[in-house]
Length: 234
Image (cartoon, rainbow, N blue to C red; front, side, top):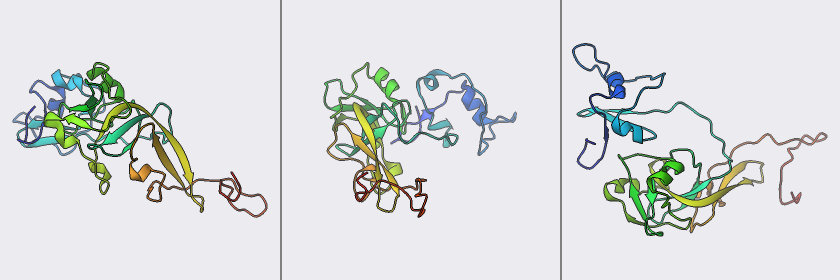
């Protein structure tokens, strides 16, 4: 680990296969191409083998590469969702347990959480979180942090800028509902099993920002869309 004084970075060793690809040595030294496409698997070295997503890696002083995932489609509704919460005593939402979307969060005393990370910006899946915590995963109602060590930068929630938010895992369940507006627009609503508050843009409030169009069936005679409303008791 190397990098800024206030940040832990994943620094690749000189014998790293990934570093060699990013370096792109021309014979007289690294050329550091701005974009490197990796189309096949490469063997990991050392700490590389212990992480799920190499968010940002450092291969030389002041030389960093960011991993950009290929575009992928995920289901908006799925079974087995887990409750995650953002910041310290922040709001909650649902997360897919097999996706690396939250920070390592353990509760060795059974209540307050301890946050850890191998480098800043590291996210892990629920199963990896469970393994690292030796099954001491935080219970569903957990929403406070006792220690975050060198990873306190990942204890943050921003309602104004969602991409700056970081979430922590719990063993709590989470479910979904579909909210239908009077004009037929629909929104996804998250319902964590235990939460003082829900992240506003997936909450059952007027501030939900996930409205989208649906292809509702139409009345065969007048052509109106048929969707559930208060008036039709559906």
